[in-house]
Amino acid sequence: MERKDLTATPLFWQLASFALFFGLWELAGRWPISFAFPPFSKTLVALLGMIADGSLLKAYQSTLQPLIIGIVLCSIIGIGFGVGMGLSRAVEWLSLPIFIVLQAAPMAAIIPLITYMYGIGITAKVLAVVVLAAPVIVMNSYKGIRNTSPSLIQMCRAFLGTKRQEVVKIILPHAAALIFAGLRLGLAMGFIGIVIAELLITPTGIGDLITYNSSVADYPKMFAAIASIVLFAALTIQALERLERKLFPPEMRGFEDVG
Amino acid sequence: MSADSIVEVKEVGKTYEGGVEALADVNVALPSGRLSTLLGPSGCGKTTLLKIIAGLIPPSRGEIWVKGKKVAGPGPERAFVFQDFALLPWGNVLRNVGFGLELRGLPKEEREQIARKHIAEVGLKSFEASYPHQLSGGMRQRVGLARALAVDADIILMDEPFSSVDEQTRRKFQEELLDLLKNRKKTVVFVTHSIEEAAYLSDQIVLLSARPGTVSKIIQPNIDREGRSPDEIRRDKNYLDAVDEIWQILKHYI
Picture (spheres, rainbow over the protein chains, first blue to last red):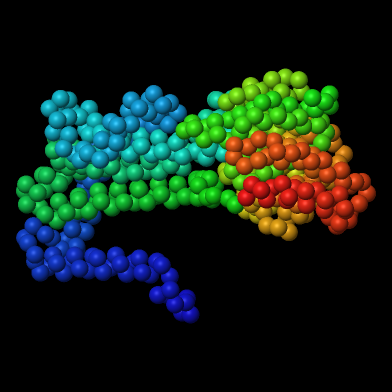
């Protein structure tokens, strides 16, 4: 241990980066920039308090429910749509323009409209997640299918593969990595969707913690809620990214060109 | 056309969408059990012709007959070796070699047994579990060749199979290919742009003209390969004459 140069390990610098960030936060909070900006230490205490009294766990349960329902819906319908678009010209021409617009549009602007149409219940929140997550999931599935190497498809045909075998044995395995990446990006969008929905539609879960504590001027708790959802989303996405690299190592995805 | 020809190309023409005419009026018969080469300047449509014979590209005009039947698509009597290998990046050597059999619905054990035999034949024994990205270009093409041999087709269509392999590997590969074919009754149709490769390997060389490709000349080098080393073949008078004859014709197209 004593011989090892700590500065040579990535972990050291990662920890240093966190220490620097939290240190600056602490300083900025103590300065203070604003009364509504608590230092890191108070926020941390508030976070631990909310974990201890169970309010954070309860908030997550109600936040994650529409998020998970929304993402599952997107996975089934979105991947189905994307794959359909990739395989059939008719479906592609019919729906590609819609999804290109949807992907570029600031979808958060639609959320008030969803409230107007579907009220303030869980349906509206699920829809908010779907509306944000679906375009990237569909587009990634579509691109994954469309990017299949023409040479592999020709090979499959030359060795008498049926159209079904072509899809099951060549196209889908080839697209799997991009489809999975789409789900990961979709989940990231879903986090945005659910937080906006909880802030704009009805305050529940994390959105409620943020709005309520802001209204009673308990800023450390409000910041703790914000920090916890940021951290939670970041860790989840990071974990999915690792899983993705493990499941689909780049050299087996078939994007490398041989020769 | 002679009775022992297994592939007959009759007045085949190909015009691609957009009006590029790749082939015009190609007539040629390929003898059974022999190695025929399609050779010509780049862009003469030799790969297109091979893929038309394979049934992968439909001709715009004319017909292909294989074993007395008109070609309407790929068939079990033809196997293809691709220029870019076309291996499944997510499949190991065993899966790739057995892939043609897998598509035909052979049970796993049976196809793996056949695949192992052909893996050994092309000199890749002990690489069964390797993935394409772990193999060199030459080894990848051996996998491609083993896959074509595994489906036991009468005709093997090879599209510039050695073009992405370095010169030394290429020579060794050519020698091994002749060895592999010696004791089988396979018909091979081989596309190449290398004059030496064509002369060294072929029983019959079909010279195509520049685009739109059409048969310019058919050369039968008549090299006696029986019991002779590769170096002796490369010094054979018939081999050298064939190389010279091809060059005299091809240089007009360049």
